[in-house]
Image 1: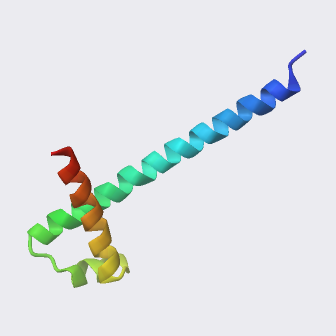
Image 2: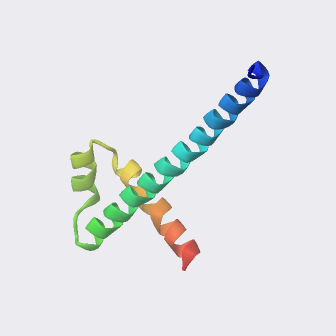
Length: 76
């Protein structure tokens, strides 16, 4: 016979691990977006054009780019 509380604890651990993995996945995707924005900006694509295409504000575009650049600077 299985331990009901053991199952509850195991399910909770699995849930918490899934949350950590999801946060890491979202962070990688956010940084990848920032990298793509930075690359586009280096090729003279305007913030306005990026914002319009992504349906974001220019400030949101800047934030994605800045986050990527600050992380890239930390790793250098």
